[in-house]
Length: 157
Image 1 (tube, helix red, strand yellow):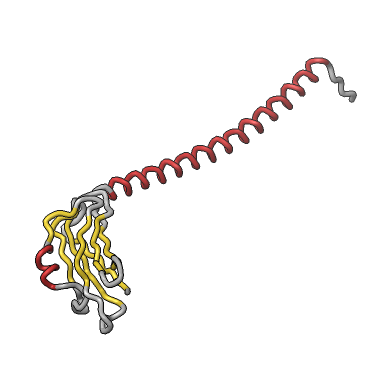
Image 2: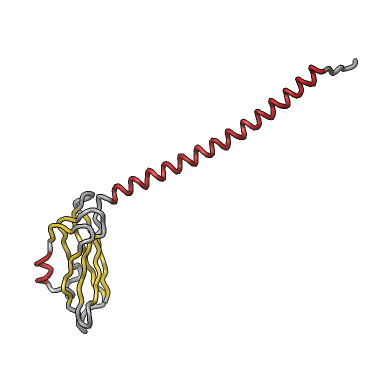
Protein backbone atom coordinates (compact mmCIF):
# COMPACT_ATOMS: atom_id res chain seq x y z
CA UNK A 1 0.00 0.00 0.00
CA UNK A 2 1.73 3.04 -1.23
CA UNK A 3 0.80 6.44 0.00
CA UNK A 4 0.58 9.02 -2.65
CA UNK A 5 0.96 12.66 -1.79
CA UNK A 6 -0.31 15.04 -4.37
CA UNK A 7 -0.37 18.83 -4.55
CA UNK A 8 -3.74 19.14 -2.77
CA UNK A 9 -2.36 17.26 0.26
CA UNK A 10 0.61 19.66 0.47
CA UNK A 11 -1.72 22.67 0.35
CA UNK A 12 -3.95 21.12 3.02
CA UNK A 13 -0.92 20.47 5.27
CA UNK A 14 0.28 24.04 4.81
CA UNK A 15 -3.20 25.35 5.58
CA UNK A 16 -3.28 23.21 8.75
CA UNK A 17 0.11 24.55 9.92
CA UNK A 18 -0.91 28.11 9.12
CA UNK A 19 -4.18 27.79 11.06
CA UNK A 20 -2.33 26.29 14.08
CA UNK A 21 0.12 29.21 14.01
CA UNK A 22 -2.77 31.71 13.78
CA UNK A 23 -4.56 30.02 16.71
CA UNK A 24 -1.40 30.13 18.86
CA UNK A 25 -0.74 33.78 17.98
CA UNK A 26 -4.34 34.77 18.72
CA UNK A 27 -4.28 33.01 22.11
CA UNK A 28 -0.99 34.76 23.02
CA UNK A 29 -2.39 38.12 21.93
CA UNK A 30 -5.57 37.58 23.98
CA UNK A 31 -3.51 36.85 27.12
CA UNK A 32 -1.52 40.05 26.67
CA UNK A 33 -4.70 42.01 25.95
CA UNK A 34 -6.33 40.68 29.16
CA UNK A 35 -3.29 41.65 31.25
CA UNK A 36 -3.45 45.17 29.80
CA UNK A 37 -7.17 45.38 30.59
CA UNK A 38 -6.52 44.20 34.17
CA UNK A 39 -3.75 46.76 34.72
CA UNK A 40 -5.92 49.53 33.26
CA UNK A 41 -8.73 48.57 35.63
CA UNK A 42 -6.35 48.69 38.62
CA UNK A 43 -5.09 52.12 37.54
CA UNK A 44 -8.65 53.41 37.13
CA UNK A 45 -9.53 52.17 40.63
CA UNK A 46 -6.46 53.88 42.10
CA UNK A 47 -7.30 57.10 40.30
CA UNK A 48 -10.87 56.94 41.58
CA UNK A 49 -9.66 56.41 45.17
CA UNK A 50 -7.27 59.35 44.80
CA UNK A 51 -10.04 61.62 43.52
CA UNK A 52 -12.36 60.59 46.35
CA UNK A 53 -9.65 61.27 48.93
CA UNK A 54 -8.99 64.65 47.30
CA UNK A 55 -12.64 65.62 47.44
CA UNK A 56 -12.75 64.69 51.14
CA UNK A 57 -9.61 66.76 51.73
CA UNK A 58 -11.34 69.82 50.32
CA UNK A 59 -14.00 69.54 53.04
CA UNK A 60 -11.51 69.33 55.90
CA UNK A 61 -9.69 71.88 57.95
CA UNK A 62 -6.29 70.87 59.28
CA UNK A 63 -5.28 72.78 62.39
CA UNK A 64 -1.81 72.86 63.86
CA UNK A 65 0.10 74.68 66.55
CA UNK A 66 3.71 75.46 67.33
CA UNK A 67 5.73 77.41 69.82
CA UNK A 68 7.74 80.14 68.12
CA UNK A 69 10.42 82.42 69.50
CA UNK A 70 10.41 86.10 68.56
CA UNK A 71 13.59 87.69 69.75
CA UNK A 72 15.40 87.10 73.02
CA UNK A 73 12.59 86.66 75.53
CA UNK A 74 9.41 86.73 73.44
CA UNK A 75 7.51 83.51 72.74
CA UNK A 76 4.19 82.88 71.04
CA UNK A 77 1.97 79.86 70.52
CA UNK A 78 0.79 80.00 66.93
CA UNK A 79 -2.42 78.14 65.95
CA UNK A 80 -3.04 77.86 62.20
CA UNK A 81 -5.24 76.20 59.60
CA UNK A 82 -3.45 74.57 56.69
CA UNK A 83 -6.50 72.69 55.38
CA UNK A 84 -8.54 73.61 52.33
CA UNK A 85 -11.68 74.39 54.30
CA UNK A 86 -12.25 77.00 57.01
CA UNK A 87 -12.48 75.76 60.60
CA UNK A 88 -15.42 76.93 62.70
CA UNK A 89 -15.88 77.16 66.46
CA UNK A 90 -12.17 76.64 67.15
CA UNK A 91 -11.34 75.89 70.79
CA UNK A 92 -8.01 75.44 72.57
CA UNK A 93 -7.64 73.29 75.67
CA UNK A 94 -4.65 72.41 77.83
CA UNK A 95 -5.28 68.89 79.24
CA UNK A 96 -2.15 68.93 81.45
CA UNK A 97 -2.78 72.45 82.71
CA UNK A 98 -1.87 75.82 81.28
CA UNK A 99 1.33 77.34 82.60
CA UNK A 100 2.53 78.43 79.16
CA UNK A 101 -0.05 80.83 77.71
CA UNK A 102 -1.64 83.83 79.42
CA UNK A 103 -5.20 82.71 80.33
CA UNK A 104 -6.74 86.13 79.51
CA UNK A 105 -5.26 85.93 76.02
CA UNK A 106 -6.81 82.49 75.46
CA UNK A 107 -10.19 83.54 76.85
CA UNK A 108 -10.19 86.68 74.71
CA UNK A 109 -9.48 84.90 71.42
CA UNK A 110 -11.13 81.49 71.83
CA UNK A 111 -13.57 80.03 70.97
CA UNK A 112 -12.81 81.49 67.59
CA UNK A 113 -15.81 81.69 65.24
CA UNK A 114 -13.82 80.94 62.07
CA UNK A 115 -10.24 80.27 61.07
CA UNK A 116 -9.83 80.51 57.30
CA UNK A 117 -7.35 78.60 55.21
CA UNK A 118 -3.75 79.68 55.97
CA UNK A 119 -4.97 82.04 58.69
CA UNK A 120 -3.31 81.92 62.11
CA UNK A 121 -3.79 83.18 65.65
CA UNK A 122 -0.95 83.92 68.04
CA UNK A 123 -1.16 83.58 71.81
CA UNK A 124 1.34 85.25 74.12
CA UNK A 125 3.47 82.64 75.90
CA UNK A 126 5.25 83.18 79.20
CA UNK A 127 8.48 81.20 79.31
CA UNK A 128 10.67 81.31 82.41
CA UNK A 129 13.13 79.06 84.24
CA UNK A 130 10.36 76.97 85.86
CA UNK A 131 8.43 76.31 82.64
CA UNK A 132 8.06 72.67 81.62
CA UNK A 133 9.85 71.61 78.46
CA UNK A 134 6.81 69.87 76.95
CA UNK A 135 3.21 71.11 76.84
CA UNK A 136 0.11 69.33 75.57
CA UNK A 137 -2.43 71.38 73.64
CA UNK A 138 -5.77 70.10 72.33
CA UNK A 139 -7.43 71.78 69.35
CA UNK A 140 -11.16 71.24 68.77
CA UNK A 141 -13.03 72.52 65.71
CA UNK A 142 -15.84 71.98 63.21
CA UNK A 143 -15.59 71.88 59.43
CA UNK A 144 -17.62 70.76 56.42
CA UNK A 145 -16.54 67.14 56.91
CA UNK A 146 -17.25 66.69 60.62
CA UNK A 147 -18.74 68.61 63.52
CA UNK A 148 -16.32 67.23 66.10
CA UNK A 149 -12.63 67.27 65.10
CA UNK A 150 -9.84 67.03 67.66
CA UNK A 151 -6.09 67.11 67.44
CA UNK A 152 -3.58 66.78 70.28
CA UNK A 153 -0.24 68.50 69.76
CA UNK A 154 2.83 68.52 71.97
CA UNK A 155 4.73 71.78 72.05
CA UNK A 156 8.36 71.73 73.18
CA UNK A 157 10.70 74.48 74.23
